Image 1 (tube, one colour):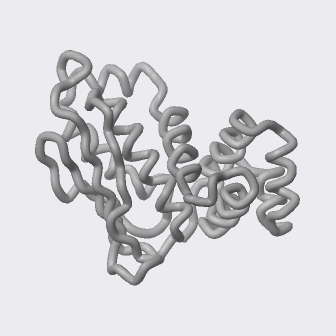
Image 2 (cartoon, one colour):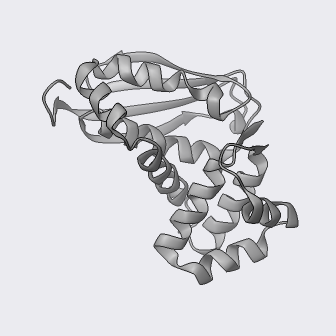
Length: 192
C-alpha cells in the first residue's frame, strides 16, 4: 500500500515537537536509508510505501515511546489536527450533521491511500465503527495512527471525550481493520 508523504512529515514534526530535534535525528539514524532519504526529500502530495511510515513509527516507539503503541495514536491525532484546520471544515461542521460529515471525511481515504476503502459501517449516539476493506495489512503502527485520527475527527465535529480503539486488524489475520469510536452523549457546540 502506498500513502501520501504527508503522514511521514506529520509524524516527524510531532516527534520533533514532543521530543526535540535530537530525538528525531536518533530515530532517523536507526531507520533504513530509504526512510531517511524519503524524510529529507518528502513532498506532502507524493506517494511512498506505507511500510516506510510503519518503519519510522516502529523505531520511534522503541526509542522515545512507551513501547505500547500509544504514541502512534498521538501521531495520528496530531496529523488530523493539522489536516482538519481551516474555515471550510469549521463551516461544514456547523452546516452538516456530524454523522454525515464523518461519513464524508472517511470517503476521502483514496486521496491519501492507494488501496482500500474506509467506511463508517455503524453509527448511533455515542458509537461509530469505521472499517477499512480491500487493503493489504498496513501494520499495527499505521493502524494506531488511524485510532488517533478517528478520535480527533470525532472531537472536531463536536462529540465529547471520544475514545478510539482498534478492535480488528488485518495484521492479526482479520479480513479487515475496524476501529470503534465511543464518546459521551451530548454535544459541545450547537449544531452537533
